[in-house]
View 1 (tube, rainbow, N blue to C red):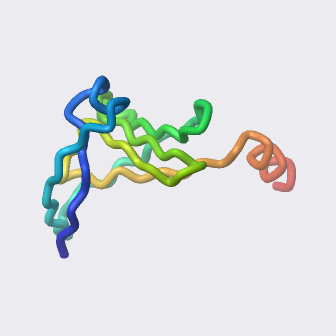
View 2 (cartoon, rainbow, N blue to C red):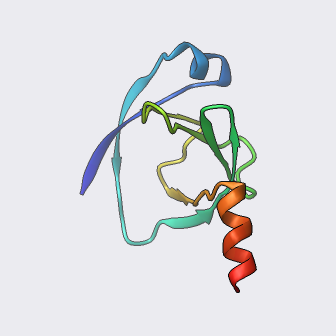
Length: 93
């Protein structure tokens, strides 16, 4: 399976909306890295503790996504829970 993604080359371009297209081939032997997440204004930001230069930003209002320094051999994944919901969930357990 292949997919076309848009990728930033550096942080300055990530705010200027300059993207380049890149084809990525997924294979069964890819690494998975679990990302940490937080929210800043309208953006949910994912950063990888193993890849300090990787960052994925998702705008929760308009659905736009920006990625910088993505390695196609590594599948970055993570989840975000708003602080309010996270506290409620933790109190239930």
